[in-house]
Image (tube, rainbow, N blue to C red):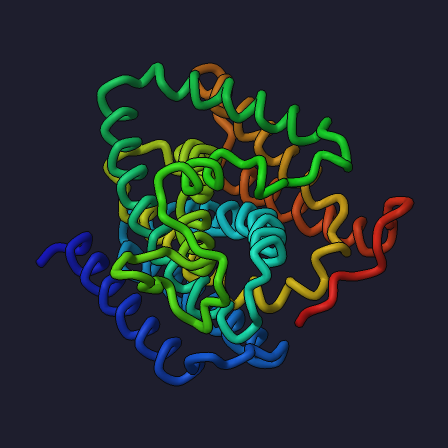
Amino acid sequence: MDKTQLIYLVFSVVIVVALVFDLGLLSKKNQVISLRTALVQTIFWVSLSFIFCGFIWYENAGGNGKEDAISYISAYLLEWSLSIDNIFVFIIIFSFFKVKAENYSRVLLMGILMAIVFRIIFIALGSQLVARFEWIMYIFGVFLLFTGIKMFMSKEEEEFNPEKNWAYRLMKKFMRITHVEPEGRFIITHNNKAYFTTLSMVVVMLGLIDIVFAVDSIPAVFSIIPDPNKKLLIYSSNIFAVLGLRSLFFLLRGAASKFDFLQQGIAIVLAFIGVKMLVADWVHIPVWISLLVIVVCISGSIFYSIYHRRKGTPVDITSD
């Protein structure tokens, strides 16, 4: 067994054991997750991600261990920061469908598992495209630069509206839906017909919307790790970030309105990564600089949001 196979094996075992631990010990059905529990879970997933980073460094100590570890943690922090912005959309969706707090955990888990499947598919496709068509990196670069500028310039009042979203309209068209109180159920049978409940709609909507999120995040991570042969670093950084989404949701849902300028911080990161992709053939930007930009922009936008609130912003979004 070579080092790559060993790392794949360790990664798979860690994910399975962590999920069993998270589901079996840290989560219970119909349990309302407290802030303290969410903090413990978030620390658990973040610590696990950094421990795996150390393992990557150790296993390749005689080769590119340090570079691979920095690439991994840069990609992880990028995905993690993008996830924070995505959580605010999740909060709006849960509020729109009036999901009860005791159902949050199960719905999020199913949505996140769907997201993992989509990420694996997109990363596999992206790796094949980058390996066969190197020029596609320029397309990724232009797309991320455009996305970053558009995100930075977007107006405050341009809030996500689930009812006008394509995923919601798609479900309304092709799914038999009931708005009866689901009582924790995803499917209800009435007159020998199966109806999807609002909980099912939320799960499907989370999965479909993650496809949109992946359109931004997957090209961005290829800027950090452009070598298509290093799919393990891309997979692990993405999956660890996605797995931490659930606990991060419970940690941040009561403070969503406090991060008014996070979007601008993420926009600067995406624009920087887009420029990095476009100038890669002429200017080499070390991966540690990307890591520094990510940390400074995201942490800076969070701190700036805390001390500079926009006019007319509500004081807070309280939990159920």
